[in-house]
Length: 536
Image (cartoon, helix red, strand yellow):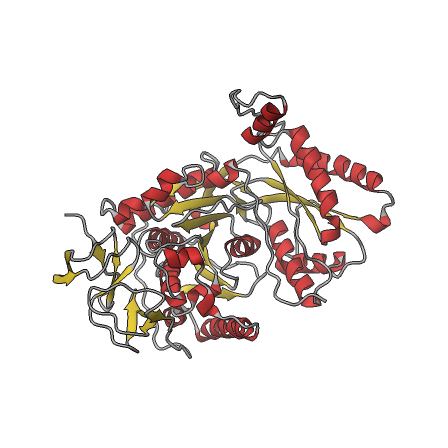
Protein backbone atom coordinates (compact mmCIF):
# COMPACT_ATOMS: atom_id res chain seq x y z
CA UNK A 1 0.00 0.00 0.00
CA UNK A 2 1.29 3.47 -0.90
CA UNK A 3 2.38 5.48 2.14
CA UNK A 4 0.28 8.51 3.02
CA UNK A 5 2.45 9.99 5.79
CA UNK A 6 6.20 9.86 6.27
CA UNK A 7 8.59 10.81 9.06
CA UNK A 8 12.12 11.76 8.08
CA UNK A 9 13.94 11.04 11.36
CA UNK A 10 13.09 8.81 14.35
CA UNK A 11 13.00 11.81 16.71
CA UNK A 12 10.50 13.81 14.61
CA UNK A 13 7.18 14.65 16.22
CA UNK A 14 5.57 15.70 12.94
CA UNK A 15 5.08 13.85 9.65
CA UNK A 16 4.76 14.96 6.01
CA UNK A 17 1.55 14.28 4.09
CA UNK A 18 2.48 12.51 0.83
CA UNK A 19 -1.06 12.87 -0.57
CA UNK A 20 -4.08 15.01 0.27
CA UNK A 21 -5.59 13.85 3.58
CA UNK A 22 -9.13 14.34 4.79
CA UNK A 23 -10.81 14.71 8.16
CA UNK A 24 -11.46 11.30 9.68
CA UNK A 25 -8.80 9.44 7.70
CA UNK A 26 -7.14 6.75 9.80
CA UNK A 27 -3.48 6.33 8.89
CA UNK A 28 -0.78 4.09 10.34
CA UNK A 29 2.64 5.74 10.56
CA UNK A 30 5.57 4.17 12.41
CA UNK A 31 3.21 1.38 13.56
CA UNK A 32 0.88 3.85 15.27
CA UNK A 33 -2.54 4.99 14.11
CA UNK A 34 -3.22 8.67 13.50
CA UNK A 35 -6.74 10.05 13.00
CA UNK A 36 -6.63 13.13 10.75
CA UNK A 37 -8.56 15.97 12.42
CA UNK A 38 -8.88 18.34 9.45
CA UNK A 39 -8.32 18.31 5.69
CA UNK A 40 -4.58 18.56 5.00
CA UNK A 41 -3.00 19.10 1.60
CA UNK A 42 -0.06 17.03 0.39
CA UNK A 43 3.36 18.41 1.44
CA UNK A 44 2.02 19.89 4.70
CA UNK A 45 2.83 18.64 8.20
CA UNK A 46 0.75 16.62 10.68
CA UNK A 47 1.32 16.47 14.44
CA UNK A 48 2.12 12.94 15.64
CA UNK A 49 1.58 13.85 19.29
CA UNK A 50 -0.33 16.53 21.16
CA UNK A 51 1.77 19.71 20.94
CA UNK A 52 0.96 22.22 23.66
CA UNK A 53 1.71 25.93 23.47
CA UNK A 54 5.50 26.38 23.69
CA UNK A 55 6.34 22.78 22.79
CA UNK A 56 9.25 22.32 20.43
CA UNK A 57 8.71 20.85 16.97
CA UNK A 58 11.27 18.51 15.44
CA UNK A 59 11.70 17.48 11.81
CA UNK A 60 14.74 15.94 10.06
CA UNK A 61 15.93 15.33 13.64
CA UNK A 62 16.42 19.06 14.34
CA UNK A 63 14.43 21.82 16.00
CA UNK A 64 12.33 23.59 13.33
CA UNK A 65 9.78 25.58 15.36
CA UNK A 66 7.57 25.82 18.42
CA UNK A 67 3.82 25.58 18.88
CA UNK A 68 2.11 28.91 19.58
CA UNK A 69 -1.16 27.17 20.52
CA UNK A 70 -2.40 23.64 21.04
CA UNK A 71 -1.89 21.39 18.00
CA UNK A 72 -3.67 18.11 18.76
CA UNK A 73 -2.39 14.78 17.49
CA UNK A 74 -3.58 14.45 13.88
CA UNK A 75 -3.91 18.22 13.46
CA UNK A 76 -2.13 20.29 10.79
CA UNK A 77 0.76 22.70 11.33
CA UNK A 78 0.16 26.20 9.95
CA UNK A 79 1.61 29.69 10.23
CA UNK A 80 -1.12 30.38 12.79
CA UNK A 81 -0.04 27.71 15.29
CA UNK A 82 3.72 27.43 14.62
CA UNK A 83 6.56 29.93 15.02
CA UNK A 84 10.15 29.70 13.83
CA UNK A 85 12.63 28.44 16.40
CA UNK A 86 16.14 27.06 15.92
CA UNK A 87 18.79 25.64 18.19
CA UNK A 88 21.78 27.74 19.27
CA UNK A 89 25.23 26.59 18.15
CA UNK A 90 28.43 27.83 19.77
CA UNK A 91 31.01 25.37 18.44
CA UNK A 92 31.81 21.75 17.67
CA UNK A 93 30.31 19.20 20.03
CA UNK A 94 31.60 16.10 18.27
CA UNK A 95 33.52 14.95 15.22
CA UNK A 96 31.37 13.09 12.74
CA UNK A 97 32.81 9.89 11.28
CA UNK A 98 31.80 9.60 7.65
CA UNK A 99 31.23 6.35 5.79
CA UNK A 100 31.42 7.25 2.09
CA UNK A 101 29.13 5.54 -0.42
CA UNK A 102 30.42 2.73 -2.61
CA UNK A 103 32.15 4.42 -5.57
CA UNK A 104 33.48 1.31 -7.30
CA UNK A 105 31.22 1.81 -10.33
CA UNK A 106 32.21 5.47 -10.62
CA UNK A 107 35.94 5.63 -9.89
CA UNK A 108 37.01 5.03 -13.50
CA UNK A 109 34.24 7.09 -15.09
CA UNK A 110 35.07 10.22 -17.06
CA UNK A 111 33.30 13.13 -18.67
CA UNK A 112 34.23 14.91 -21.88
CA UNK A 113 35.44 18.37 -20.93
CA UNK A 114 37.52 21.35 -22.02
CA UNK A 115 40.97 21.16 -20.43
CA UNK A 116 42.59 24.46 -19.36
CA UNK A 117 46.28 25.16 -18.83
CA UNK A 118 45.86 25.51 -15.06
CA UNK A 119 44.53 21.96 -14.73
CA UNK A 120 40.84 22.86 -14.42
CA UNK A 121 38.34 21.27 -16.81
CA UNK A 122 35.28 23.00 -18.19
CA UNK A 123 31.89 21.55 -19.06
CA UNK A 124 31.30 24.45 -21.47
CA UNK A 125 33.57 26.51 -23.72
CA UNK A 126 32.48 30.14 -23.50
CA UNK A 127 33.88 33.46 -24.68
CA UNK A 128 32.50 35.93 -22.14
CA UNK A 129 31.74 39.65 -22.54
CA UNK A 130 31.07 41.77 -19.44
CA UNK A 131 31.39 45.34 -18.09
CA UNK A 132 33.20 46.50 -14.96
CA UNK A 133 30.48 49.12 -14.45
CA UNK A 134 26.81 49.49 -15.37
CA UNK A 135 27.64 52.49 -17.60
CA UNK A 136 28.91 49.99 -20.18
CA UNK A 137 25.75 47.85 -20.20
CA UNK A 138 24.44 49.43 -23.41
CA UNK A 139 27.68 48.70 -25.24
CA UNK A 140 27.53 45.11 -24.03
CA UNK A 141 23.95 44.86 -25.32
CA UNK A 142 25.01 46.19 -28.74
CA UNK A 143 27.80 43.61 -28.90
CA UNK A 144 25.36 40.91 -27.80
CA UNK A 145 22.96 41.76 -30.61
CA UNK A 146 25.78 41.83 -33.19
CA UNK A 147 27.46 38.58 -32.19
CA UNK A 148 24.34 36.53 -31.48
CA UNK A 149 22.69 37.62 -34.74
CA UNK A 150 25.68 37.12 -36.99
CA UNK A 151 27.01 33.95 -35.36
CA UNK A 152 23.49 32.49 -34.98
CA UNK A 153 24.11 31.12 -31.51
CA UNK A 154 20.46 31.25 -30.49
CA UNK A 155 17.24 30.19 -32.13
CA UNK A 156 14.55 32.63 -33.19
CA UNK A 157 11.78 32.53 -30.62
CA UNK A 158 8.29 31.37 -31.57
CA UNK A 159 6.99 34.56 -30.00
CA UNK A 160 8.79 36.64 -32.67
CA UNK A 161 6.98 34.69 -35.39
CA UNK A 162 3.70 35.15 -33.49
CA UNK A 163 4.20 38.93 -33.43
CA UNK A 164 5.06 38.94 -37.14
CA UNK A 165 1.85 37.05 -37.87
CA UNK A 166 -0.18 39.53 -35.82
CA UNK A 167 1.44 42.51 -37.54
CA UNK A 168 0.63 40.97 -40.92
CA UNK A 169 -2.94 40.15 -39.91
CA UNK A 170 -2.24 36.41 -39.97
CA UNK A 171 -3.27 35.62 -36.40
CA UNK A 172 -4.38 32.09 -37.34
CA UNK A 173 -1.19 31.17 -39.19
CA UNK A 174 0.95 28.35 -37.72
CA UNK A 175 3.88 29.42 -35.59
CA UNK A 176 7.12 27.81 -36.67
CA UNK A 177 10.33 27.61 -34.67
CA UNK A 178 13.27 28.61 -36.88
CA UNK A 179 16.85 27.84 -36.08
CA UNK A 180 20.07 28.61 -37.92
CA UNK A 181 23.29 26.66 -37.62
CA UNK A 182 25.95 28.37 -35.54
CA UNK A 183 29.14 29.33 -37.39
CA UNK A 184 31.30 27.92 -34.59
CA UNK A 185 30.66 24.44 -33.16
CA UNK A 186 32.92 24.38 -30.08
CA UNK A 187 32.51 27.82 -28.53
CA UNK A 188 29.59 29.91 -27.30
CA UNK A 189 29.59 33.67 -26.87
CA UNK A 190 27.83 34.90 -23.73
CA UNK A 191 27.18 38.33 -22.23
CA UNK A 192 26.81 39.62 -18.69
CA UNK A 193 25.37 42.94 -17.55
CA UNK A 194 24.87 44.18 -13.99
CA UNK A 195 24.02 47.30 -11.96
CA UNK A 196 27.29 47.57 -9.98
CA UNK A 197 30.82 48.87 -10.27
CA UNK A 198 30.15 52.40 -9.02
CA UNK A 199 27.79 54.43 -6.83
CA UNK A 200 28.00 52.10 -3.84
CA UNK A 201 30.55 51.54 -1.13
CA UNK A 202 34.07 50.52 -2.16
CA UNK A 203 33.55 47.11 -0.56
CA UNK A 204 30.76 46.35 -3.03
CA UNK A 205 33.02 47.24 -5.95
CA UNK A 206 35.70 44.92 -4.58
CA UNK A 207 33.15 42.15 -4.01
CA UNK A 208 31.93 42.49 -7.61
CA UNK A 209 35.53 42.47 -8.81
CA UNK A 210 36.17 39.13 -7.06
CA UNK A 211 32.99 37.67 -8.54
CA UNK A 212 33.87 38.75 -12.10
CA UNK A 213 37.43 37.48 -11.65
CA UNK A 214 35.96 34.14 -10.58
CA UNK A 215 33.93 34.00 -13.78
CA UNK A 216 37.04 34.60 -15.88
CA UNK A 217 38.94 31.93 -13.94
CA UNK A 218 36.05 29.44 -14.17
CA UNK A 219 37.12 26.52 -16.39
CA UNK A 220 34.01 26.96 -18.53
CA UNK A 221 35.43 30.25 -19.83
CA UNK A 222 37.97 30.20 -22.67
CA UNK A 223 38.58 33.94 -22.56
CA UNK A 224 36.88 37.27 -21.97
CA UNK A 225 36.24 40.75 -23.33
CA UNK A 226 36.00 43.33 -20.53
CA UNK A 227 34.59 46.85 -20.92
CA UNK A 228 35.49 49.71 -18.57
CA UNK A 229 34.32 53.31 -18.61
CA UNK A 230 37.41 54.60 -16.78
CA UNK A 231 36.25 56.69 -13.82
CA UNK A 232 34.25 54.06 -11.89
CA UNK A 233 34.97 52.58 -8.46
CA UNK A 234 35.78 49.19 -9.92
CA UNK A 235 38.99 50.18 -11.67
CA UNK A 236 40.76 47.91 -14.14
CA UNK A 237 43.66 47.47 -11.70
CA UNK A 238 41.27 46.29 -8.98
CA UNK A 239 39.85 43.66 -11.35
CA UNK A 240 43.33 42.52 -12.40
CA UNK A 241 44.43 42.22 -8.77
CA UNK A 242 41.32 40.17 -7.94
CA UNK A 243 42.09 37.82 -10.80
CA UNK A 244 45.73 37.53 -9.74
CA UNK A 245 44.64 36.69 -6.17
CA UNK A 246 42.64 33.73 -7.51
CA UNK A 247 45.15 32.63 -10.13
CA UNK A 248 48.54 34.32 -10.33
CA UNK A 249 49.29 32.83 -13.76
CA UNK A 250 46.12 33.08 -15.81
CA UNK A 251 46.93 31.98 -19.36
CA UNK A 252 43.54 32.79 -20.92
CA UNK A 253 43.24 35.72 -23.35
CA UNK A 254 41.58 38.68 -21.61
CA UNK A 255 40.82 41.74 -23.74
CA UNK A 256 40.20 44.94 -21.74
CA UNK A 257 38.92 48.23 -23.22
CA UNK A 258 38.43 51.58 -21.49
CA UNK A 259 35.94 53.85 -23.23
CA UNK A 260 37.31 57.15 -21.91
CA UNK A 261 40.65 56.30 -23.53
CA UNK A 262 39.27 55.23 -26.92
CA UNK A 263 37.26 58.12 -28.39
CA UNK A 264 33.95 57.44 -30.12
CA UNK A 265 31.65 54.54 -29.38
CA UNK A 266 31.88 53.36 -32.98
CA UNK A 267 35.67 53.28 -32.90
CA UNK A 268 35.67 51.34 -29.66
CA UNK A 269 33.03 48.79 -30.71
CA UNK A 270 34.66 48.23 -34.11
CA UNK A 271 37.99 47.51 -32.41
CA UNK A 272 36.37 45.18 -29.90
CA UNK A 273 34.52 43.20 -32.58
CA UNK A 274 37.68 42.71 -34.67
CA UNK A 275 39.83 41.68 -31.71
CA UNK A 276 37.22 39.41 -30.12
CA UNK A 277 36.44 37.61 -33.37
CA UNK A 278 40.08 36.58 -33.72
CA UNK A 279 40.11 35.09 -30.20
CA UNK A 280 36.71 33.42 -30.56
CA UNK A 281 38.00 31.61 -33.67
CA UNK A 282 40.96 30.33 -31.64
CA UNK A 283 38.68 29.21 -28.79
CA UNK A 284 36.62 27.23 -31.28
CA UNK A 285 39.67 25.02 -31.92
CA UNK A 286 39.56 23.67 -28.34
CA UNK A 287 38.10 20.15 -28.30
CA UNK A 288 36.51 18.07 -25.54
CA UNK A 289 38.71 15.36 -24.01
CA UNK A 290 38.14 12.78 -21.25
CA UNK A 291 38.51 14.01 -17.67
CA UNK A 292 38.00 12.27 -14.30
CA UNK A 293 34.85 13.09 -12.32
CA UNK A 294 37.12 14.67 -9.69
CA UNK A 295 37.34 17.68 -12.03
CA UNK A 296 33.66 18.47 -11.47
CA UNK A 297 32.79 21.32 -9.14
CA UNK A 298 29.07 20.90 -8.54
CA UNK A 299 26.92 23.81 -7.37
CA UNK A 300 24.06 22.64 -5.11
CA UNK A 301 21.07 24.97 -5.39
CA UNK A 302 17.36 24.95 -4.55
CA UNK A 303 14.59 27.39 -5.35
CA UNK A 304 10.83 27.43 -5.51
CA UNK A 305 11.03 24.73 -2.83
CA UNK A 306 8.00 22.82 -1.59
CA UNK A 307 7.17 20.39 1.20
CA UNK A 308 8.60 17.49 -0.82
CA UNK A 309 11.96 19.11 -1.64
CA UNK A 310 13.59 17.95 1.59
CA UNK A 311 12.47 14.32 1.23
CA UNK A 312 13.02 13.66 -2.49
CA UNK A 313 15.04 16.07 -4.65
CA UNK A 314 17.40 17.48 -2.02
CA UNK A 315 18.50 14.18 -0.42
CA UNK A 316 18.86 12.62 -3.90
CA UNK A 317 21.17 15.47 -4.85
CA UNK A 318 22.90 15.01 -1.49
CA UNK A 319 23.64 11.39 -2.32
CA UNK A 320 25.09 12.38 -5.71
CA UNK A 321 27.11 15.02 -3.86
CA UNK A 322 28.50 12.38 -1.49
CA UNK A 323 29.57 10.18 -4.42
CA UNK A 324 31.31 13.14 -6.04
CA UNK A 325 33.04 14.10 -2.78
CA UNK A 326 34.27 10.52 -2.35
CA UNK A 327 35.67 10.67 -5.89
CA UNK A 328 37.64 13.84 -5.13
CA UNK A 329 35.23 16.26 -6.78
CA UNK A 330 34.03 19.48 -5.16
CA UNK A 331 30.33 19.85 -4.29
CA UNK A 332 29.46 23.42 -3.24
CA UNK A 333 26.68 24.23 -0.74
CA UNK A 334 25.61 27.85 -0.28
CA UNK A 335 22.48 29.84 0.73
CA UNK A 336 23.49 30.62 4.33
CA UNK A 337 20.04 31.91 5.41
CA UNK A 338 18.77 28.43 4.50
CA UNK A 339 21.25 26.74 6.82
CA UNK A 340 19.69 28.37 9.87
CA UNK A 341 18.82 25.68 12.40
CA UNK A 342 21.22 23.05 11.08
CA UNK A 343 24.40 24.85 12.12
CA UNK A 344 25.31 22.24 14.74
CA UNK A 345 25.28 19.39 12.25
CA UNK A 346 27.35 21.41 9.77
CA UNK A 347 29.81 22.60 12.42
CA UNK A 348 30.36 19.02 13.57
CA UNK A 349 31.06 18.02 9.96
CA UNK A 350 33.78 20.68 9.55
CA UNK A 351 37.23 19.07 9.28
CA UNK A 352 38.75 21.36 11.94
CA UNK A 353 37.88 24.03 14.49
CA UNK A 354 39.09 26.89 12.28
CA UNK A 355 36.56 25.96 9.59
CA UNK A 356 33.81 25.63 12.18
CA UNK A 357 34.59 29.06 13.66
CA UNK A 358 34.70 30.70 10.23
CA UNK A 359 31.31 29.21 9.36
CA UNK A 360 29.71 30.41 12.60
CA UNK A 361 31.33 33.84 12.22
CA UNK A 362 29.93 34.30 8.71
CA UNK A 363 26.49 33.08 9.80
CA UNK A 364 26.37 35.47 12.79
CA UNK A 365 27.57 38.46 10.79
CA UNK A 366 25.00 37.75 8.07
CA UNK A 367 22.12 37.32 10.51
CA UNK A 368 23.14 40.44 12.45
CA UNK A 369 23.13 42.45 9.21
CA UNK A 370 19.69 41.07 8.32
CA UNK A 371 18.30 41.99 11.75
CA UNK A 372 19.89 45.46 11.58
CA UNK A 373 17.95 46.06 8.37
CA UNK A 374 14.68 45.18 10.10
CA UNK A 375 14.48 41.61 8.85
CA UNK A 376 15.97 38.24 9.86
CA UNK A 377 16.48 34.67 8.73
CA UNK A 378 13.05 33.80 10.14
CA UNK A 379 11.50 35.84 7.29
CA UNK A 380 13.23 33.75 4.60
CA UNK A 381 10.37 31.45 3.47
CA UNK A 382 8.56 32.92 0.46
CA UNK A 383 4.77 32.90 0.02
CA UNK A 384 5.19 29.95 -2.36
CA UNK A 385 7.27 28.04 0.19
CA UNK A 386 4.66 28.59 2.90
CA UNK A 387 1.74 27.65 0.64
CA UNK A 388 3.43 24.33 -0.09
CA UNK A 389 4.28 23.37 3.49
CA UNK A 390 7.53 25.16 4.44
CA UNK A 391 6.17 27.36 7.19
CA UNK A 392 9.34 28.23 9.16
CA UNK A 393 12.87 29.07 8.06
CA UNK A 394 14.32 26.25 10.16
CA UNK A 395 11.93 23.77 8.51
CA UNK A 396 12.96 25.04 5.08
CA UNK A 397 16.64 25.02 6.07
CA UNK A 398 16.61 21.48 7.43
CA UNK A 399 15.37 20.24 4.06
CA UNK A 400 17.58 22.55 2.01
CA UNK A 401 20.74 21.36 3.80
CA UNK A 402 20.08 17.82 2.56
CA UNK A 403 21.58 18.91 -0.79
CA UNK A 404 24.99 18.80 0.91
CA UNK A 405 24.73 15.10 1.74
CA UNK A 406 26.70 13.80 4.72
CA UNK A 407 30.37 14.20 3.73
CA UNK A 408 32.92 16.19 5.78
CA UNK A 409 33.08 19.93 5.08
CA UNK A 410 36.56 20.61 3.76
CA UNK A 411 36.43 24.39 3.43
CA UNK A 412 34.37 27.47 4.33
CA UNK A 413 34.48 30.35 1.85
CA UNK A 414 33.15 33.89 2.01
CA UNK A 415 31.41 35.38 -1.02
CA UNK A 416 33.86 35.77 -3.91
CA UNK A 417 36.40 33.25 -2.61
CA UNK A 418 37.33 30.47 -5.04
CA UNK A 419 36.98 26.72 -4.40
CA UNK A 420 40.37 24.96 -4.42
CA UNK A 421 39.84 21.94 -2.14
CA UNK A 422 38.28 18.60 -3.09
CA UNK A 423 35.28 17.57 -1.04
CA UNK A 424 32.30 19.57 0.20
CA UNK A 425 32.77 23.35 0.31
CA UNK A 426 30.41 25.91 1.90
CA UNK A 427 30.18 29.34 0.24
CA UNK A 428 28.47 32.29 1.96
CA UNK A 429 25.70 33.55 -0.31
CA UNK A 430 22.13 34.81 0.02
CA UNK A 431 19.23 32.38 -0.23
CA UNK A 432 18.03 34.18 -3.36
CA UNK A 433 18.13 31.64 -6.20
CA UNK A 434 19.94 33.69 -8.81
CA UNK A 435 22.30 35.49 -6.42
CA UNK A 436 23.34 32.14 -4.95
CA UNK A 437 23.78 30.40 -8.32
CA UNK A 438 25.71 33.42 -9.61
CA UNK A 439 28.04 33.23 -6.60
CA UNK A 440 28.73 29.49 -6.78
CA UNK A 441 29.72 29.75 -10.44
CA UNK A 442 31.96 32.68 -9.49
CA UNK A 443 33.55 30.37 -6.91
CA UNK A 444 34.36 27.84 -9.63
CA UNK A 445 31.28 25.63 -10.09
CA UNK A 446 31.42 24.25 -13.62
CA UNK A 447 27.95 22.68 -13.39
CA UNK A 448 24.93 23.26 -11.11
CA UNK A 449 21.99 21.12 -10.03
CA UNK A 450 18.97 23.17 -9.01
CA UNK A 451 16.18 21.39 -7.11
CA UNK A 452 12.68 22.84 -7.24
CA UNK A 453 9.18 21.91 -6.15
CA UNK A 454 7.29 24.83 -7.64
CA UNK A 455 9.33 25.42 -10.82
CA UNK A 456 11.84 28.09 -11.81
CA UNK A 457 13.57 28.87 -15.13
CA UNK A 458 16.87 30.01 -13.58
CA UNK A 459 20.03 29.46 -15.63
CA UNK A 460 23.55 30.85 -15.81
CA UNK A 461 25.64 32.44 -18.60
CA UNK A 462 28.56 30.01 -18.37
CA UNK A 463 27.54 26.94 -16.33
CA UNK A 464 24.80 24.40 -17.16
CA UNK A 465 21.99 24.47 -14.58
CA UNK A 466 20.16 21.13 -14.32
CA UNK A 467 16.64 21.27 -12.84
CA UNK A 468 15.56 18.44 -10.53
CA UNK A 469 11.87 18.45 -9.61
CA UNK A 470 10.73 17.24 -6.20
CA UNK A 471 7.45 15.92 -7.58
CA UNK A 472 6.14 14.47 -10.84
CA UNK A 473 3.23 16.88 -11.11
CA UNK A 474 5.71 19.72 -11.66
CA UNK A 475 7.69 17.67 -14.19
CA UNK A 476 4.51 17.06 -16.18
CA UNK A 477 3.33 20.66 -15.93
CA UNK A 478 6.65 22.33 -16.83
CA UNK A 479 8.57 19.84 -19.00
CA UNK A 480 10.36 22.67 -20.79
CA UNK A 481 12.35 23.58 -17.66
CA UNK A 482 12.62 20.28 -15.71
CA UNK A 483 15.49 17.96 -16.63
CA UNK A 484 15.09 15.17 -14.07
CA UNK A 485 12.08 14.14 -11.95
CA UNK A 486 12.57 12.77 -8.43
CA UNK A 487 8.84 12.15 -7.99
CA UNK A 488 9.40 8.35 -8.02
CA UNK A 489 10.95 8.77 -4.55
CA UNK A 490 7.68 10.19 -3.22
CA UNK A 491 5.74 7.31 -4.76
CA UNK A 492 8.12 4.75 -3.26
CA UNK A 493 9.24 3.55 -6.70
CA UNK A 494 12.89 4.53 -6.23
CA UNK A 495 15.18 4.92 -3.24
CA UNK A 496 17.16 8.06 -2.51
CA UNK A 497 20.31 6.19 -3.55
CA UNK A 498 18.82 5.05 -6.87
CA UNK A 499 17.60 8.55 -7.62
CA UNK A 500 20.98 10.04 -6.71
CA UNK A 501 22.80 7.66 -9.04
CA UNK A 502 20.37 8.41 -11.87
CA UNK A 503 20.99 12.12 -11.31
CA UNK A 504 24.77 11.65 -11.37
CA UNK A 505 24.52 9.88 -14.73
CA UNK A 506 22.58 12.86 -16.05
CA UNK A 507 25.17 15.27 -14.65
CA UNK A 508 27.91 13.38 -16.52
CA UNK A 509 25.93 13.56 -19.78
CA UNK A 510 25.38 17.31 -19.42
CA UNK A 511 29.01 17.89 -18.42
CA UNK A 512 30.07 15.99 -21.54
CA UNK A 513 27.81 17.99 -23.85
CA UNK A 514 25.77 14.95 -24.95
CA UNK A 515 22.67 16.42 -23.29
CA UNK A 516 21.90 20.13 -23.05
CA UNK A 517 20.29 21.38 -19.85
CA UNK A 518 16.82 22.85 -20.35
CA UNK A 519 17.96 26.22 -18.98
CA UNK A 520 20.57 26.37 -21.76
CA UNK A 521 18.04 25.31 -24.40
CA UNK A 522 15.88 28.20 -23.18
CA UNK A 523 18.87 30.59 -23.30
CA UNK A 524 18.34 31.42 -19.62
CA UNK A 525 21.39 33.46 -18.61
CA UNK A 526 20.73 34.90 -15.15
CA UNK A 527 23.41 36.89 -13.34
CA UNK A 528 22.82 38.90 -10.14
CA UNK A 529 25.74 39.93 -7.91
CA UNK A 530 25.12 40.22 -4.18
CA UNK A 531 25.08 43.87 -3.12
CA UNK A 532 25.95 43.80 0.58
CA UNK A 533 26.33 47.52 1.20
CA UNK A 534 24.36 50.74 0.76
CA UNK A 535 24.29 53.10 -2.21
CA UNK A 536 26.20 56.36 -1.86
